[in-house]
Image 1 (cartoon, one colour):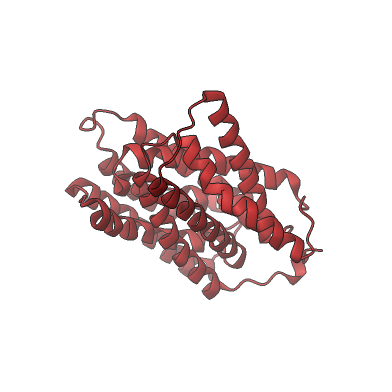
Image 2 (cartoon, rainbow, N blue to C red; image 1 turned 90 degrees about the horizontal axis):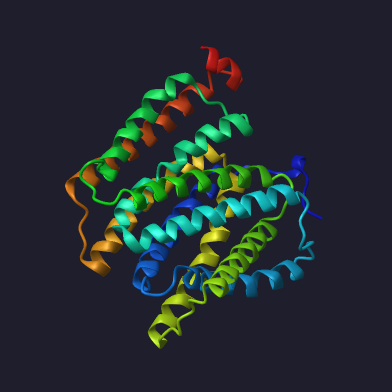
Length: 304
């Protein structure tokens, strides 16, 4: 039986370590998705989940945990949110610069902070509004409205950030009711089955080459490690703290994109990414300073 709320202990340092490791895995996943972008998107999504669908059930059985979990509604909601967010995100990897896609994805922590304030009662203060505006300006520099011919991929990246933020807030809530292996298992099977059904309906399966198979299974292995480290991070530390460190993805993915694809982000993307990172850091510092002083609930902060 999973531990109850009284036995749950936060460990901020461990949570931060897990999320930093996760950003490295996630950045490598972006590189691999771009490497096999000639394959159908749903095929990539399905292969991404195969190692998790095979390994996690054995781990659950060995741990003597129920496969079905306790909070089934939140488990399904979180998984479906990730399905939408992940499909949208992988699409942007195939059609955009990785740095552009990841930079827009890093608006997710702001959505996470806002949603955590509403649903988890993690304090959100009106004075944080300038940081959100600063982040929005950074996003505009990355999107380049009026300069970008096709705005659709950039908008899809924003949609992905919103749904991933919703999933992360739900993940923080699930720490009180369900084991992290059950959470990972739900996501793997729902995402895997959805991608397989769409792939079959589209009748778009392509036989991968040996090199493609290597990259696809490497992608699946990294996805498994990524889900475990992400889930542990949000179980061990508050959502609005953990989300700050996901900004490291911009740095890692820019470095990997330069190494593997010889692709440098343009100056507007660099400035926009810096705006987003700075606004995220200021938002975090403001929260750490005010949370020790202000004890008002979110509803009172709105009236301030």
